[in-house]
Length: 260
Image 1 (cartoon, rainbow, N blue to C red):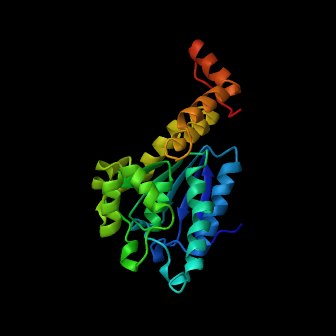
Image 2: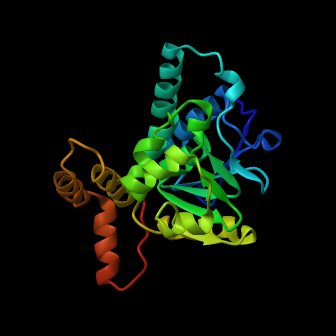
Image 3: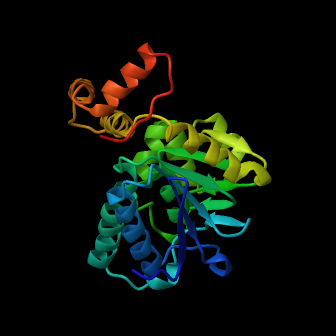
């Protein structure tokens, strides 16, 4: 697929994805969502990719929301289809990816932009970034998993307040309430995200994938996370990486994991 609205490049086992609509504050339109779905699928099936760094072009916006002009005349059925396809193909696909996604939030992360960041496994923000879910000002609610993921991250009371007031919060406040992992100066943002991914990519890839599945199970209703953990733990014993990791530990050397 030829991309018009995103940039993608694999360097040193990290897939860099940049939403490249700076003049539109990197807003998510249909084409951008389709391109994101395609590159997320690429990450999942490409062995070379050990982690993904997702950011927005420029310093003003990560993603300032969805492209409202595309859906302002939608019917009830079209609105439901919009949310369902976006959640399945992009937002859930990121959360359920066995490759860790780190969001580098370089500016405004509003509406669908904050939902995109919340779908990632780890979030780093520039100290100038601001976040919020302003959908109720349009007569809507978040439709890409925002009500669920925000509640899991910050708790019911804070999520209800942020969504119903449509207030924006600073990166500092977002870190304090557990919405993001780290706040750094804008100039250090990509470096911090890379630092995290460079640590992760030194670890056993199959164990990383198992850990993501187990952590996700902790917040999925109807799933016994403890049983998922036991199952994933057991499966690790059958991998070459387990043999390599334990062997390296006993031999006091650095492990060379192959993801097998």
